[in-house]
Length: 450
Image 1 (spheres, rainbow, N blue to C red):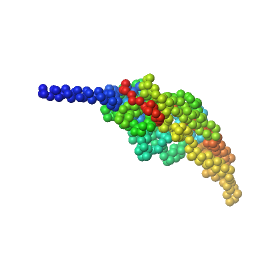
Image 2: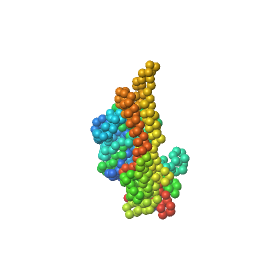
Image 3: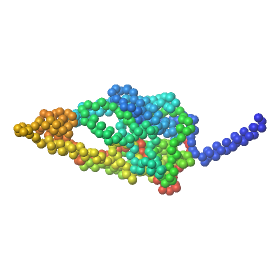
Image 4: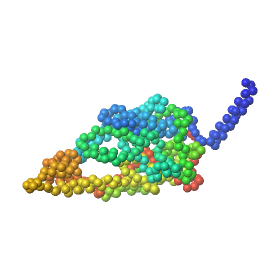
């Protein structure tokens, strides 16, 4: 036994020297044995697992984290973690909205409802209490990007977007298909609707209090993607801290964002930690105008601060935005976001104008008596007031024509004459920022653990 002691001491010395060397030149990895503190103000993006009726305040809802949560260089809440909550608020409907809905044949206009999340189930089955702010749901959320998708993008090193588990990718971050859009359009014409959140509805509940998360094991705590191999550009996942709208923003307006996912080098050195601040400005802003001309917005990031007092100049532009599908946003190669007008908007005005014209046509039977033409009156009424219009229009042909003309005029005005849509980025909008390294000095720095 005594002869083994010199050997053991030698091994201890070698291990100590190796550890010191790794501490100087090796990858930066924080200790994963200590619990992590997720500060208040961090949004949890939760996608519902199943359809939830909006009936009573307090009704339970359940979802999963659609995006992971990091603290500095560690993954602390993996995507797919179960989150439990409840219906927090069910608001009323303003009088002018209700009147407009009734005139359009909708007797049950949607009420403003929000959900609040109060518990998170960890992978070992333990529960973690939390409290988020009430958040309204978004039915379809998609990642709008200005770079190629698919195998070619992956081979070229382009990021595939935010890390999500398979369930969230399928249910919350997928544009609705044509059949789904057609079904929604048909259901919207019915006078009565049962309000509910569909499976996959996305909520962004902001933590109201910090939470201490038990440490994951070493494998889980590492970022799964080591960063980009190309030295010419790097992508950062971040969220906006500033509300930006093309309607009110002006060129030069300050914009701030915070990095939500750490960036590592190929050899696992930490380059940019979670929590790094990005500062920039509005480089271009064009509000929506009449004749259905849509807004346009471009943000440029000029500085990154991985740690206090270590600000560094960068050239960054937005390459991806997580946005509501119904906002119809698009990104161009210059990083500018613009609102687009779907081609389907031309269909209903054309139909409504045709129906309004046909409503003046009168058929006669063989004895010269005017036909009632219930079907034609129903079509004319539906153009202006939906199902209710179809019923009211049966009273007389002039009334049916009046309803059809009013519906056609409103459709033409709203689709061709009225103001277009503005680009709006609320607080905590998830974005991806591409950093262009123009010189060696512009490379993101390697930082030390806190």
